[in-house]
Amino acid sequence: MMTATEQQDTARLALAIGVVAAGSAVCLATYFAIQGPFGTINDLGNGVAGVLSAGLAWRLRRRLTGRTRDLAVGAAILGAGLTVTGSALVISDTTGFFLAGLVSSLGFAGIGTWLIALNRSDVAVAAWPKRLRLVGVAAGALMALGFISAPGILLRLDDMANAPWWVWIGSMGWLGTFVVYPAWAFWLAIVETRVAGRPIPLQGGSEA
Image (cartoon, rainbow, N blue to C red):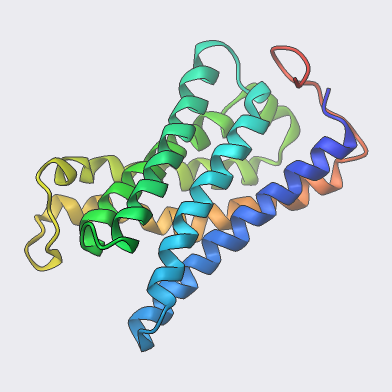
């Protein structure tokens, strides 16, 4: 069983993800409008959102079972590592922003895979509103489009002007990362806060 305190902590973590991811999107838009340090803030925010997502995946790991849990949580943790790598690449000027963005996009695709599995789990079906779960699956599906861009990393594509068409399809994953995923996270924070006084059963045993 999850205690009220654990559910409140989950709500805070989800809220943090929503704030950071949405804030990163605002910083990116601001950077394109007026330049300044907002691009770097966006890069930092992407890495932080990835790390927070890995933390949420680990906290909610008992809401998945068996091999699905291992694969989904593993994908989220690996994805978080890639988001940090992508941010580090561009902040350190090791690569341009485009190639670094492909790396980060692949990382969020991994997180999207976990998000789909989580929102389709039996525990989520029992505990969360249907619309929340649908938003979570939609966010995860959009984020998973980042897998399409993965070959661009091997090709070291770092020129936006000459990027092939399929890379742009993969780039649609950012719509999930910057818009739908934060919306899901904010909603989850509200739901977890409201049910904090009504612990829900978890599959696979109690939280460690």
